[in-house]
Length: 74
Image 1 (cartoon, rainbow, N blue to C red):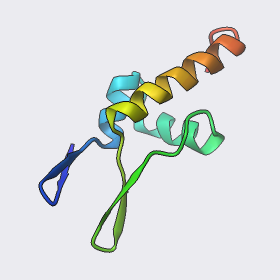
Image 2: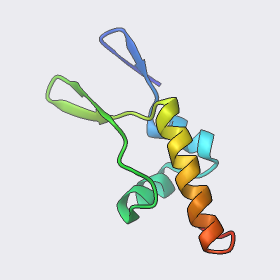
Image 3: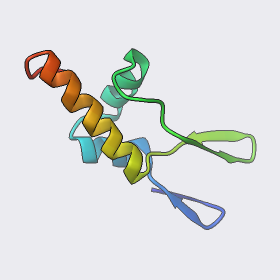
């Protein structure tokens, strides 16, 4: 969890914990298109990915659909 301008945002580590995989695996899933790109927040010159509950739920749905098509494997 990070705080930007008083607002709390979930990080990739938080998303990894929720999805039961590593942060590296989430990056791989995004790169391969298995889950959508996360929303971003601008903090000065930095653009930070954040992983709100809605994103996590959508990612779980995408992964479940993918695993069902592949016979249980991601």
